[in-house]
Length: 144
Image 1 (tube, rainbow, N blue to C red):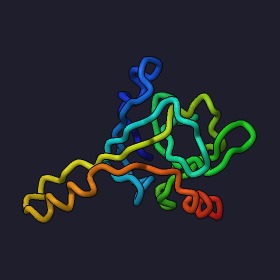
Image 2: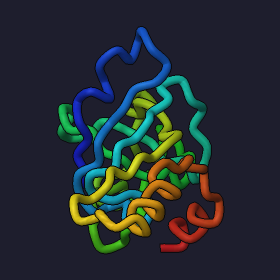
Image 3: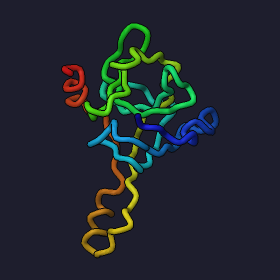
Image 4: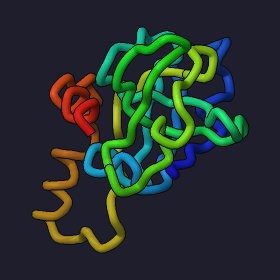
């Protein structure tokens, strides 16, 4: 289950943006272990959006999932990696008050082995990417 740093929660009331670090494989191929995320705390949640939330049973644990659909009582959230688990199929609908924010940007740090100019240039072109609400992924996830 991906765990995010507690810094995503710090300053939530004071600042509209925060950051979090991904650990775990549940959002592969969208997000990988070690990715840094910019989280918009005041963002409107839509189906397909990648969100940061508190785990319903362990509220000191922050997780990142895709908001698949709105249901009575909150959001049905799913990971992009069907084999990793740890989503609404395990714990049900997530109440709105546990959703902390919407992920806007992903920064993928450079790996230590990337030394050649070609590898560094390739990393530089893909290091920072926006994270969009992918409606096609949302439809695919609902079909699971």
